[in-house]
Length: 366
Length: 257
Image 1 (cartoon, chains in turn blue, brown):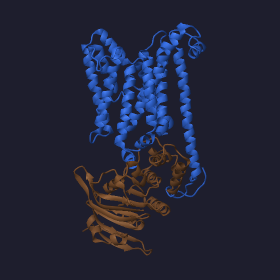
Image 2 (cartoon, one colour):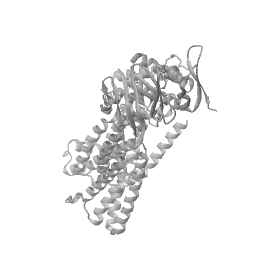
Image 3 (cartoon, one colour):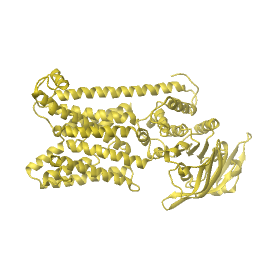
Image 4 (cartoon, chains in turn orange, red):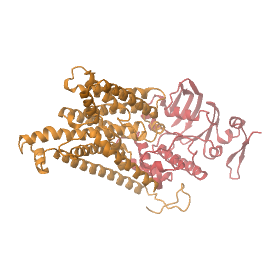
């Protein structure tokens, strides 16, 4: 801060910082801080991931698990199977799905200009649940000959169709972001009712399977799903990063973004296609997991603001961290029992989320 | 560089707003005031020039180039438009918000030159002390100043400002228009500003275009336009054009009896 000429904006008696070099330095420091934030969250994610792999019904020391991770057969075949065939896919799926949901949520919130938008609130999860229940109760497959992936594929197709419907709705004249949220609510209630109908028609065993699917579980993890999820994320993150400046401009409001040369209509469509694939994949992998798509972007926003160059990657990391921690907690509450992650994210996540909102409010008031 | 608008028709759906609008030969460095009552087509003309509304007829040329044929991004590089709406709740600071306006038409990476342009623009408009302030925390007037900065930073050939002083007090109205004139002296863009304050228009503009119901009613030097009886008729007031001892023209307006 240096003493400079009086600001024409503030009138007299105001000492202001007018040095352009100072402004550039402040901005550079801000950017460095954001990279630091990404590094810290990445470190926490690595730690959580390792603890997730190291935790399970069988008690093994951290060093043993580390040995097996670096050299699979170092402690015998049994440990290799436990770590590599069971724990690792679950831990990686938690990270991937958390990232997919958070990136989808971050982008939905940006294009709809609504911090409450995420796959769950727009009815995508409800549609996926209905698709899954259709497979469980009636054995109906939307795509023929998918074999053991019947439930997953049905969930994926219904989630994708819902996103497609939202996408088409955006092309209608006079449909703004508020209308799209209302569409989402309507979709949510429609599929919830259809799901209830499926449950009404289902046998006890089928109801149990539907409920278990809806609770969200990482136990359905597999290397095939991981490969697909990783591929999607590898495409989605650069796809989003290439559009970071127009997406950030969109946060200034539609009129301002358009005045800056952003083709808002086209951008919305491109991003919705990306979101559709991310959300449908995530939900079909693990079932209904609310809150991650909401809280990941929310925490990222508080840490690095809304410059999408930092916001999108950090949302992915925070989402991955949240679901990785959830996976860890789900195994740690009662030894020998793994609780469904959907329950954990809601029970632990929502109070955390509310406390974040309240603390932000307190900061603003002070 | 010269901006020319010829026989422009434009509107929304079936509603035609602009009727055969022509504003020829606006030379670089000229400050053109667009005046006229509410709903006279000022914003629609700006949106059409900026490419946000597609004209149904007519031409818009910068030099020899027909800008209606340019891609959106190329057009935004040459024509910068500040809409009436400003202010938002995004978690961005003022420096970032001006930088992002610049980055829409430049490469992905933030270069040193980009940062220089942003800091120079903020300094030129007297906004440097707000650089680190969140845009959601700005007053209406400050947000409007930042919107002007977002437009100027792109250094376009044509700058369109839709009511740039509507949220500013008298001091800041004079301040922002003086800053814009200073920028014009350096870079020589065409500046068109929609202004409701006829005295500001008289003081700062080189040329005034009077719009009524989407038609150009008069186009010329401010002291000539403001003396026309059409001014009173268009605004439904009685007016006299006076001149101060310092030679500045001003409009003495009162409600028609």
